[in-house]
Amino acid sequence: MEVLFYIAAAVTLLATVRVITHVHAVHALLYLVVALIALALIFYLLGAQFAAALEIIIYGGAIMVLFIFVVMLLGPLAAEQEKSWLTPGTWVGPSVLALVLLGEVGYLIAAGDHLPIDFMETREKGVSIILYGPYVIGVELASMLLLPGLIGAYHLGRRVPKESR
Amino acid sequence: MLTTHALVLAIMLFCLGLVGLLSRRNILYMLLSLEIMLNAASLAFIAGGARWGQADGEVMFLFILTLAAAEVSVALGIVLQLSYRFQTLDADAFSEMKG
Image (cartoon, rainbow over all chains, first blue to last red; front, side, top):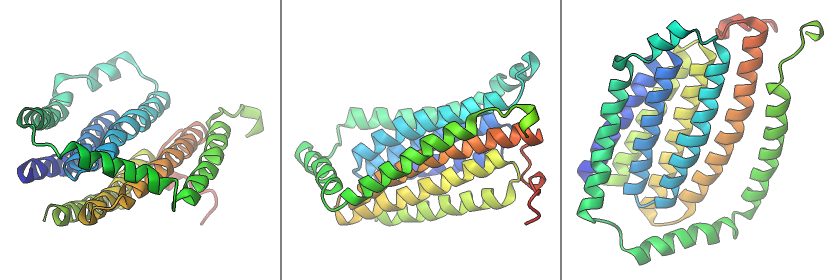
C-alpha cells in the first residue's frame, strides 16, 4: 500500500511540474489529466473510493473536456499545427506515466488487498447521511452557486458582435 | 503515516500551483494552476478525513468539486471573451482599467 502511494505521489508531482512548465496548452492538458488520475488513485488508497470515482468522472472527464474545447476554440487549428501537436514524442511522456498508474491498478486488482466491504459501505453511507444532515446548508449554497455559474457562463460564452463593443 | 505524507504531498502540489500562478502570464495556464491548487486543497481534506476516519473530508471534497465546476465554466467564458476582444491570452495585456 505505502509503495503504491509513493509511486502515485511521484507521478502526480512529475505530471504537475510538466503542466506548469509546458508551452503548448494541449500537452499541458494531457499531463494534467494524468496528474488527476494519479490523484484519484491516491484518494482510493486513502480509503475514499467515492471521491476517487468523482475525481476521474468530473475532474478528469467533464472539466478537462471543457478546457480542451476552449483550447480548440481559441486558436485556428491549421493542419500543420495539428501535425506538430500530435507527433509521437508529445504523448510518450503522459503515456509512460499513465502506464505506471495502470500497473498499480492491475496490482491492486491482482493482489485483492482491498478494504473490507462492510467498512467501505458504512463510510460511503456516512458521507451521504452527513451531507444531507449537518451539511444540508452547504448543499443549498452549492445550488445557489451553480445557477449563477450557469447563467454567467451562458452570458460570457456568447461572441459579441463587432459594432456593440 | 500515510496521511501525514499525503498532507506533505498536498503542500507540495499547492506550492507548485502557486509557482505556476505567479510565474506564468498566459491566462489559460493561470487557470490550470488554480485547478492544481484546488486539487491540493481537496487532497488535504481527504487526508484529514482518512486520518480521523470521518466522512467530513469527503463531504468537503464534494463541495470543492462543485465550486471548481462553477469556477471553471465562468472562467473559461471569460478566457473566450478576452481572446475575442484582445486577440491574445497575455494577462499583462488586459490593463484597460489601469489598476
